[in-house]
Image (cartoon, rainbow, N blue to C red; front, side):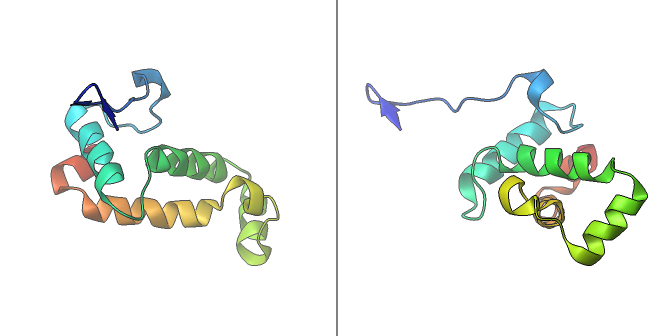
Length: 103
C-alpha cells in the first residue's frame, strides 16, 4: 500500500504483544519477512499459531489425549492447535538456522 508515493510501513506489534521468545530483532524481522513473502502466510499468522499452541499445551494431559483421539469442536471456530504446530514447523524450516534457534 502506498501513501503519497512512499510505501507505508508495516505495523509491528509492540514488544510485549509478540508471543515468541525471540529476543533479537533479527529473528522478528525474519518472521515478518516470511509472513510478507510466503503465499501460505499472512501478517500475524505466526503469532496466532504460537498463541494457539501455547494455550493448547498448557491444558491437562487428559484433555490433550481426548482432543488427539476425538478432536475438538471449538477448533472449527477458534483454530486447530495441531495445524498451528504444523505451520510453526514449516516456518522454522524456512528460517535461517540462527534465527530458528533463537525463537
